[in-house]
Amino acid sequence: MTIQLDSLYERIGYRPTKSVTFADLPEFLSLLALQFPFENGAVLNNERTPMTKNALTDAFLNKKRGGLCYDLNAFLYYILKEIGFSVHMVQGTVFNQQERAWALTGTHIAVILQKENETYLLDTGFGINLPLAPVPFSGETVASKTGAYRIRKVKTDKGDYLLEMDKGEGWQTGYAFAMKPIDEKVLARVRDAIFDDEASPFNKHPLASKLTKDGKIILSKDHFTKHTDSGITKEKVEDGKFATIFNQAFFD
Image (cartoon, rainbow, N blue to C red; front, side, top):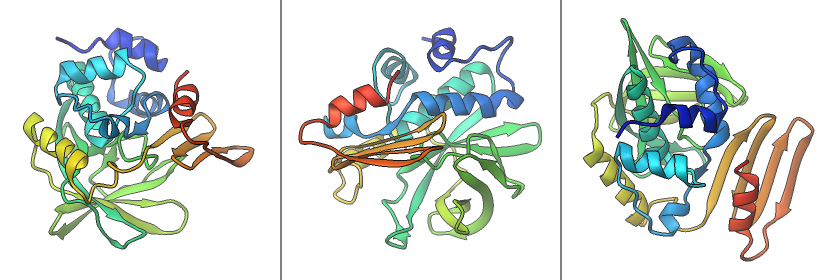
C-alpha cells in the first residue's frame, strides 16, 4: 500500500503544483502541525496501532486522531520516503526541564533527512516545540513561531547530538539523539514503553496540544488553554468533557 498523497494533501490543505521539494518543507511541515495534534488517547485506550505504513496511514487519514512522537514522526518518515526524500528514523531521549533530568530513555523518535552533502533533523512530534522546518547539522539556527532551534554535537550517554531550543529564555536541551537508523521493531518497543512503563509521562492522564494559525491550544484533564494573538484564555474542563472538547477544538 502506498500513502494516499492526494488525500493527505487535501486533508492538510496543501496544493502542490509539482512534487514536494526541499524548499517546500517548511510550508508542508507547518500544515501537518496544524492538522494532526500531539495527544495520548490511544495510550489511555490501549489501542496499539502497528508501527507500519499501512496502519499509520489508515489511522491518520481515516480517523480523527493525532498521536505521540512515534506515531507522528513515523508517519512523517513514511510520507517523505514516499515522496522520494532520503530519510531514516532515529531514537532519542527528552530532557525534562522541570525535573532537570532525562525522561524515559530512548522514547523519542525523530527523522533525519539527507540532501546532497547536508544532513537535517525533522520533527513533527515534540509536542508544540516544533521547528516547522528542517534543522541543519551545521549548527545554524532555525526560527519558527514556536521558538529557535539548533543542533549541537555533544556526546552524552543518550546520544551524540542535542536538539536545543530557545523559547525566549535562553538555549535549553530539548533532547539527545543518536544517528543509528531504527526500524518498525524499535518503533514498537518505544510505543510499548510509553504504554506500559511506570515512568512514562503519557499513560496516566489525557493530554492534547496543537499549533493553530494564530497560536496554540493545550488540553489537559483539568484545563483547556488557548494562546492567540489576542491573549491567553483558560477554561476549566468539567468531568467527562475532555473527549468532547478534543473532538470539537482539535479537528476542523
